[in-house]
Image (cartoon, rainbow, N blue to C red; front, side):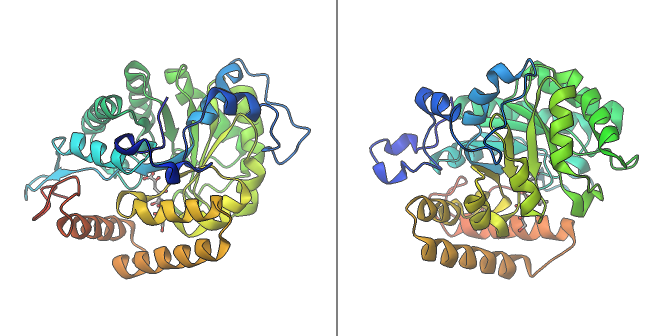
Length: 345
Ligand SMILES: CC(=O)N[C@@H]([C@@H](O)[C@H](O)[C@H](O)CO)[C@@H](O)CC(=O)C(=O)O
């Protein structure tokens, strides 16, 4: 089980907060009777996979880093560079990060060749095993045959879980169509926890996630939950149920998301300023709401400054990467040492 405390500093009790600490078998037992579900009368679904679902939801807790992909500085052809991955993973682990999301939006998965996506998944999987991190692989943003091939590959690797964007050309127009697509993909990785990536602002697929989760749970044995990247916090909160994983994917909503009951998030800024994200979670756990608000504001302002309010995703990712490089070159203890970052984006 992945830990959420620093391995290097096991005696540091200050990191033992409900949001960040490692889940224990007792947590698992008590979560079965907790009032985490918005509807206290709701029982975990009877799907076959559900016998492990509560245990799994306890694993998916804390901070996940949607990792940037590293590319070789080659003018003629941008190609994946897997060399920095191990040090990158080690650094994240030292920041008490619970796991990584690979080939996601931030990782530019939809802009990579299938063989590069597989190589990235393999190297991250290996590094994650070495450093005791969860590893979730994003499979979508490609034609269906490629998505299916990536799903079979994730199954073979035995990754911690998979996340799937909707089909971006033949966009589903109903919840049933979306469930059908997810069921098809999930059948290729049937032993892996499956999450749907709800990202309406970019995918244009803005369906009712409460209805989707209920139907997906009935139709897809390995359905586990959502990567929830929408500003509609009310709908996100209604999706929270015992035995489901709902990853929060919006930095600006972190403080509000904690108040609403989210217990796991995947945010680009976790790669760059995990300390600030952790400070918000720690302050929340300590009930210091003014500190939660102040730190959330500080984080929002930093993102605005470094991305200059870029709305174009390609520019946004490269602005975040330059910020990451700046942070690391100014610190001796970054994953790439002091001096110019040896990670080429
Ligand atoms: C669409 C997107 O980029 N979402 C980011 C957020 O960190 C997002 O950039 C942030 O909330 C904007 O400030 C992460 O959730 C991305 C993520 O998990 C992924 O790479 O798939």
